[in-house]
Image (tube, rainbow, N blue to C red; front, side, top):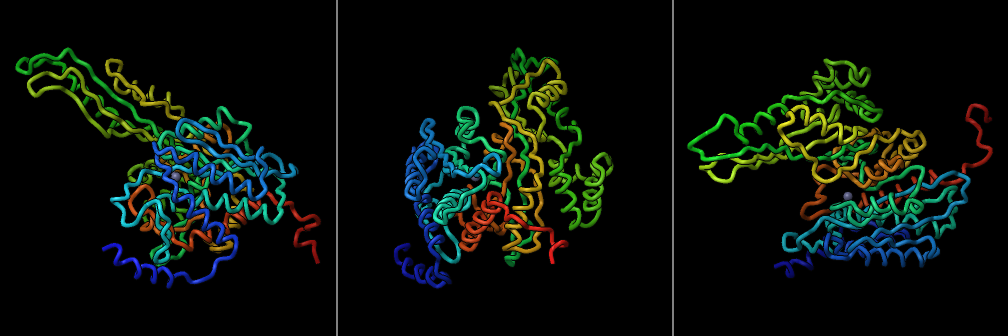
Length: 471
Ligand SMILES: [Zn+2]
């Protein structure tokens, strides 16, 4: 069936290919095709192969070997490439993406996930949206700038990691053990932020990711001597756990805010009606306004933006239906407000449930503070976005997931999620089946990165006078 349909699909694909590609676009498309073809899922050992391919492209474009580093780590690797500047503009700028992808099972997909397919105005394939498009845009931009003999005023450093979707050990390794490779005044992450389109394809908002909540899960466990269920005792591991969970349910962490959340409430308050919109505006003006904070806390979409949240998500306990339980455990998942140490939350949970209940954090979550809203970054991003989409609001945002940016921020490198993608909500299949990216978004993103990197690292034209003093 699939084979019989192929010629028709090719005709459609040809029909929507509206325009010829210029040399830079064609090169980017070729890189995109190649990087999608590497099966860079966890356990496949393909990330170093993909890094080698990209390193070859940089070498061929004239980057010296000394500035191209493949940093192996277990079955995966990072790739760091330095574009040397003349140093007049200060410390380097890092630009980030990850080479790994979420596992994709070909039998579940309509098309092979590891073959780039262009069809009906979309690029299909695992990583087309998360985030081999970012890898491609950044690599192709470096090649283009090099071919134009561009000399940046500061080093630009590509930082491609190899396990963002799983363990995030490569970024941890880079900031801890290879700081000299990746050190930067700030980092731009292609894997966060980005633009939204409405159902008619009109841009509505562009978000810059400047903060991430810390993801931390806890096990809350009660213990009991147990016994026969025909002889119930007053204490019981399951009842005790239920009591502990009710205390966590009733607790509200203190209201918190930062520049990012206030700016975000200010802009969403301007377009939100009713009590909720009024609360957003009031909170943005005065985050000590308790009544406004309470309204926001009652909205499931907003509650996480004003405080740390913790909620029970998994449950297990007991061992037989006719025995008193010897233990019961609940998993409680917390999204911790940026800048709050994980230990503070651990202590709060322990205080809530009391000393007889054990509280243990799962793994070693990394926490980071929000990045300051740097005027140079916000201005350059806004200008680059407005070049394509004039007037679209550019709004800082706090994410509740964890990208590699949480590690660079924790290491003292302010990090900004500034993806070049504009997509509809309905087009977001990252991590899922049939992941895709609008073809137009791909080429616009490419141009965006070129404009953005150049504007942050090009020599300022000398003799530019303020407009008022010029004749
Ligand atoms: Zn990603």
